[in-house]
Image (cartoon, rainbow, N blue to C red; front, top):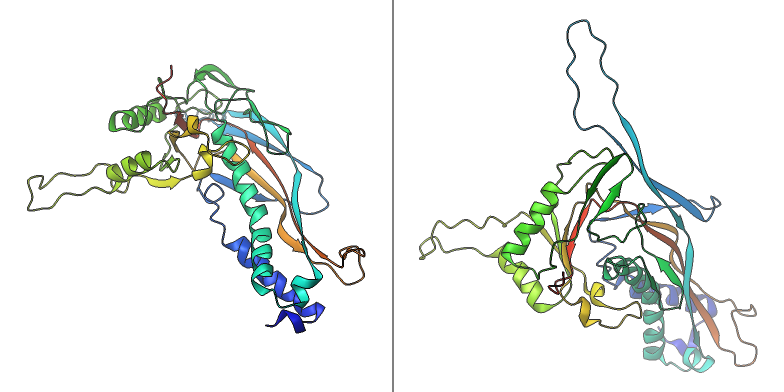
Amino acid sequence: MELNTISQSDMVKLAQVIWGNGANSVKQNMLNSGFVKVVDIPANSGNTREFSEICSNEYASRKDEGDQASRAKIQQGYSKTMTKYRIGENVGLTFEMIHENKYPEVINVLVGNGASCAKRIDLDLSMRLSYMTSTSYTDKDGESVTTTTGDDLALIYSTHTLKGSSTTYRNRLANNPKLSKAALEGMERLANEETYNSLGENLTADFGILWTTADPNTVNTAREYLQSTADITGSNAGVVNVYKGKYTHKILPRVSMSSLGVIDTDKRYYWGICSSELSSFYIGIWERPHMIPPTVGSNGEDVQTDSQEYRSRAGLGIVTVGASWIKASKGDDSA
């Protein structure tokens, strides 16, 4: 399609297709991790949402002949309020770019604009793990973001509290070892012994997701554990890989970044396991990423330069209510 002969309506259609291709090209590792729960928020319903934990006792009680059955214990857990915020970016296409057949430049501009909101969403989600041992961080726009769970503690902590019990639990692996066989077994023990409901009862759940950063050593170690096999005629014949099929490995490259989107080597070896079943990590979507194209003569067209503004917008909120669903290590051997 020749841009030097294109009509305004065709240009808008073309821009939307190119923008959509850019948005769809983004690999949103965190959003699609399996432990982030997406909640669509309807329009005209306010800019906040409260998310709560609620549980009942794990086991029924004995009922003898003629006796009244005992009542289930229902416990309201912690709550967190999600607040919407908007993200956006404008790009301008000059008159010359549109009308002088500068197709490659137009493609590059619109693809980048289409990807920016999707990338920012994944970055903001990743920061909940990137700053998992902190109670807040400053985002790329200079805004302070609270990252506490419902007990007002960091997501990964050694003594999380429960709303309906004096029991505390840890989800931070002691001494923060790098991923190894021994460390993974320690993480599994943590999941087995330190996972509770709000009543202080141990939960049995499938922690089927092993997540790491994109650090090659950590990624390759995970793959060795999860994928290794032995030749049936070889010296290790009959050896069973106990981890094969046990985990889904999720590589989260933005977790090892700062809030500015640049690599932070202090976070290189972060890793952990998660339960999709227990997860209370929510993203609310008020406004999915979309493009607002200009119309000729509107305020989308600069009367001084004749450039046209193409606007990317999205609206979302993020909260983590509880912490029992995740166990993690910084991988830095710190106490």
